[in-house]
Length: 222
Image 1 (tube, one colour):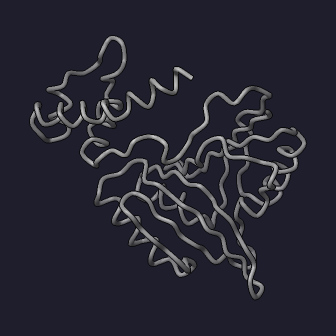
Image 2 (cartoon, rainbow, N blue to C red):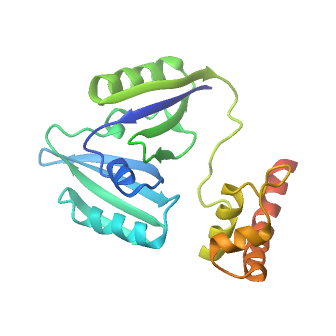
């Protein structure tokens, strides 16, 4: 399949602007859009990839204050919203065809850009999509365009669910080089970063690993 990675920005995006404001990364899956009484409505499901509880609360409170948001549902780190686009409002899904599939979720980055990775059987479909985006987005840069096998696809809700403590321990370990070779950090240092005892941190980390490893190993056996 043909795969492209794009760096995008449209000034009226309610997510990436707040990622920039609160210094967070949010993953998103644009769902659908429809038109009613001359107005366009777009729905997106999002997941907080980074950020502490205070940052997430500020993000959601700020999003609730946005008058364009007509619907909002929050469940832990996942939230779904519907936005009413202005007459001149832009949304990537307005130009997304049914012949294009998501390879990964959209990365909404604190650098103020969205990173999309999508694929299609036909290169011309991706080129048509990119042309529409260049005509309507404030920024549209092609970071990759290649014809290759799909070997790295993100499947939401397939991996086991981790508790908040397990997820936090795993993220701290990964971000600080615990899984690099040779290891860059000790468990004692990681526990100190997490603000908990070594044995407690180790328990959270091991439980997270025990949940994730079977799924990863079974996948590799296929």
